[in-house]
Length: 190
Image 1: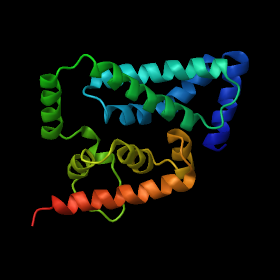
Image 2 (image 1 turned 90 degrees about the horizontal axis):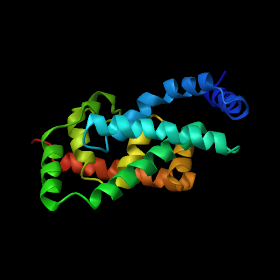
Image 3 (image 1 turned 135 degrees about the vertical axis):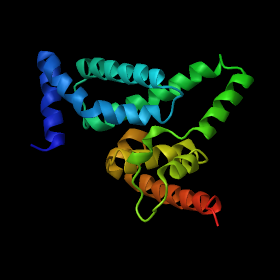
């Protein structure tokens, strides 16, 4: 059974029978991808774990309240993306400029452990260099690149997650790839 069809069946069981075992199967299938997606965007493992838990809690409530779920993949990544945005909005009010500078310094000093997971076609580079280069890109481009190359989602799934058309996502992906290549070439040791 295809994963999309299996997801739809599990969602049906959740919505009609409140089947926790069906949700556990969805959780097991998606938790590592959601954690990776979130951990790339937040400061610590603890924050990533907390936000990942919150994503799945919100998805559970959404499934119980709603009947229309075209794609669980799109739903769960959209919840994760919005939760990270909300997380930074709430933190923005409490972080001083000094704390933000310290955070920025930490980010530039230590590459994340996701380096092994980045797959970019025709770029035989150290993964940490790619991650560092992605930090210089707009968040929209980073998100598109992560969803496509790390999470290996289709452009249609990404379009549903970010709320843009399939064609617009392809354009953004093309631009993001070109920007990433430019950044990497600029920082390439000669």
